[in-house]
Image (cartoon, rainbow, N blue to C red; front, side, top):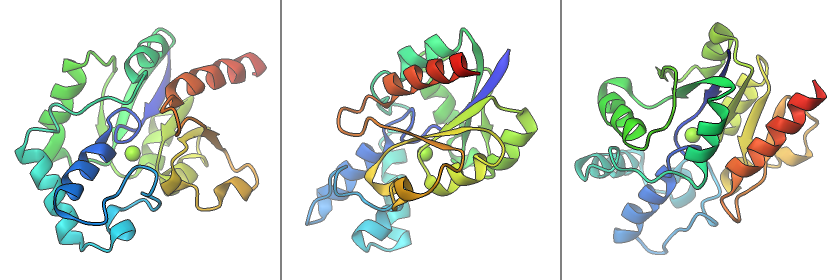
Length: 197
Ligand SMILES: [Mg+2]
């Protein structure tokens, strides 16, 4: 079976909403997914790195890593894809700090996966596993991965950066931000691309 790589945060798990909820408890002006227009929260809001780290600690203390909401359609579409591919989540989450919670949450939600890799160098993993394709939300990672295999990128305001004007460099942008229906669009795009091959 062919293998595919999938990012977890903001692709499978809605970590962005978790961060927004905690940030908005103590800050004004409040932020929303629409106003979050750079990758790192600290770059959007001007908070310090330590304060951003503190948000993750609060999430952890509240057990949110074990109970994180999935993005719409993620489960159904991954279940569908698992009939054709071995699904390998590749996450830059810190293994020692989050592995137990991440696995718990994947299993609790019955997300099918073949194995999981905790590694920030996703290009290396894509090469090592020979992925048929990858799905990401981080533009820099997607650009690196796309040198090895086709990389789908879920469209968010924080990863636009004028990329839509760049020539096709292996990144395939998946629309869906307004309705949060990237997964449905991804599935349709994958089917279309596999017919072309
Ligand atoms: Mg991500």
